[in-house]
Length: 253
Image 1 (spheres, rainbow, N blue to C red):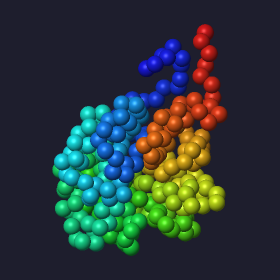
Image 2 (image 1 turned 90 degrees about the vertical axis):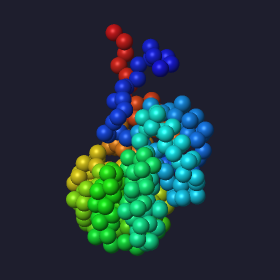
Image 3 (image 1 turned 180 degrees about the horizontal axis):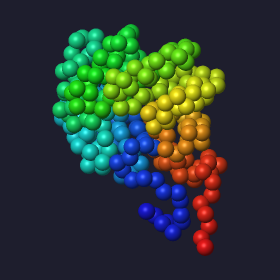
């Protein structure tokens, strides 16, 4: 690395099981992915193919994109938008098999667009796991701040997801740090107190929430961020930005 004589706090190399950085993709091109990996590939653990954009793109394009990510040792997972459409249309098993065949390691199971019972959601988790995929189960619902009103229900969701075989639980940003006057810090603290910080991936799409998660839960917190935020978040993890969260690096003897 450049300026290697200037010491900074180390981070475990990939593959990592904690301190994961998940980059949300909104259908960007392969050349932009290559540029991102060239600049920051060491700090990206998962690339989330999101917002259902992949349904509007060629399969050949997706295969090239996934191959580029795998070459950089970045795992791939498909976000839950089309998971929900597949559920509605009764083709969930076919969807998960195709995701696996394309080379993805994981899939998100969510209920952002479709009303779905907790039992049905857990059934999808089990089905995806049966297809050989890691499952990221989403807690929360886009466009609905009030999903955080019942802490006991959020706890019940997480417990059910874990029992069904979810690998991680993704905590939706909307209602926690997005679209709210104040971040729901108490809910997050109660979640990690009841379970474990490593069980979760937290959506954090702005510097304020990223600073809070890293400063409060430590540099091994798992975060879901946007592609232009990778270096900034890695600097925060190492205490180089945001008032040196983890203190100064010791001076040379």
